[in-house]
Length: 90
Picture (cartoon, rainbow, N blue to C red):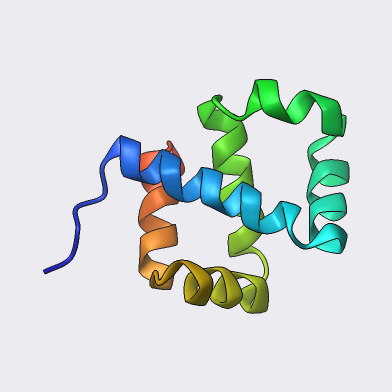
């Protein structure tokens, strides 16, 4: 049985996505640059739903990166789309 996508679960997945990006410096740098953030500001932004949605958006834009994240986290791409929706995406 699939676990229901709750706001807490969506936030956890997005935070895991941020950690995943941080472990891949080239992707992390592209994310930070694209978001217009200073790396030092990330900790303060990590609890912001809009920021977490930006992390998920970034993952969704790169199929290979998305699949690597899903494999590592034992998730399906559907989980990431649900995360995006729960965090406030269209």
